[in-house]
Image (cartoon, rainbow, N blue to C red; front, side, top):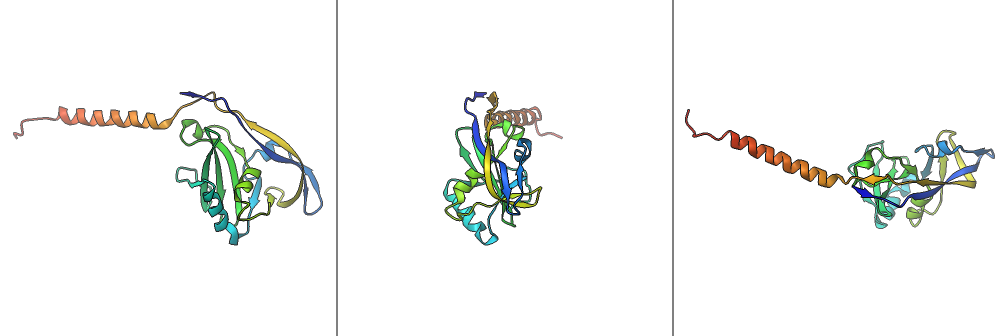
Length: 188
């Protein structure tokens, strides 16, 4: 078990103006739900964005819960945290901070969406910030105020790799013990 001290923080939109001229104050629980506010890049820029993210240190993820994305990329941030980015065929992008896949807590611990950090990593490939309110079905034109959201780390972390090594070793011992218990002379 490892004790962790460092939380991770991000800003998320609060008071927004849509391109249709309407304004809204987005509730905090609304902006915290992944998929409500989404980034967007044109389809012809997806590959450039993926390459920019990979060039910044993101790697393709195979161990993840598939949500229809074309690309699933993540990068280790600040010790135990990862920034996970899902890029869909239609150009929409969802990102969130989460506990690293190196720990069992990754499976059940809270996440927080990331908008500005993801954009910061791909802006060399596409330098326009498009935020879509997926519930209201409107594009955001202006963000007037923000929430500062902080995710505290788990009280302790359990690395899964030593556990799998122990389970593997115990399994091997069990197989060997079983095989040895079956030793016989070779008579009928």
